[in-house]
Image (cartoon, rainbow, N blue to C red; front, top):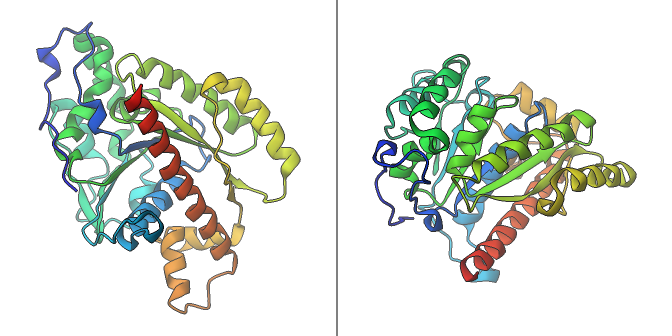
Length: 325
């Protein structure tokens, strides 16, 4: 894939009180996974959505007359100081893992992000412990110079490479409004995983605050939808209560994906015990005859498969409506 994008923009060239001109209509392929509460499923959804999107691109879609694309590429950006996506989901080699230092340097200097390759067709910008302390004071300095345009700093660092990828997925940390806003400043779509507990739903409320603020500089930022994560498949009463609360929180922006990601403790345990094995990769092992994996791997895999299809369909439909409006 190749997009005709400008190589970069320089925030200092613009009035700090005027929104920066950004090629928003060329950035439909950037998704932000956000919920202000930890443990809501952001990292799991990021890893499996990225791999499922890559798999769909490489396999093609005969029903839509989409041919297989062996050159498809997906980029994942890990903004979490825990670095779980980098270490546990994708198993980045230690010699390539800068633990988030590269992100911090790029945010400070406005230079291009430098991904590493972790699987065929899948690149990663590593996160980790380097993001723990220095991001907020750096962001405050950017705010002093550029006011709300500071929220576009990550996009400034991403734009030079954004055209190299079919999809870009950004994993955000909990309880870190600075990095959430930087991610949303670079994104087009926001997907919010949520469990049905009160803390997770309250995390959606905090996420909404960052979403609304960031739309001042990223006017086409759109809440694509909420996906219920690690929930019982037959817990319809619990789902109903969660959906009622989500409607109250999100108002006219409310949309819940029809497919929930079901809970399987066996799958969760397997993923925790074997680093660099997201669910989609576990299923690949099952297809190759690995009888040691629990049967529930397939059920949760099918959840992600259907959820990914809904993400593709909904974003394509909203893109068409926005372009026609």
